[in-house]
Image (cartoon, rainbow, N blue to C red; front, side, top):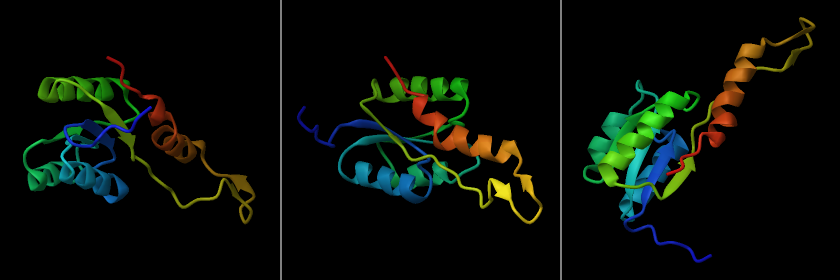
Length: 129
């Protein structure tokens, strides 16, 4: 399969308001792609797309919620007419051990589950036409 040029590509970047996600959004946009930045609504997403200008939209969503992701997809289709590529950059990290040897107890499952939902399960929130 031949590589597709970035110019005129419609790409969704999860976690696109900061860090690796933002760098990816900027790279794609600066090379001619239309980009949809998907991130939580209380992030810097609106400011990022404002800085980028034309051919960039912010689609607020929690990657753990199927309804949010579906709504974002509809916004992308409505704005750009299609979606060609997805780059999953959404990710979180808590500084905790799965087992606390000092207290001799297992860490609460909720932190681990939240991490897994954002970092792993969101990759399965794929878009299909």
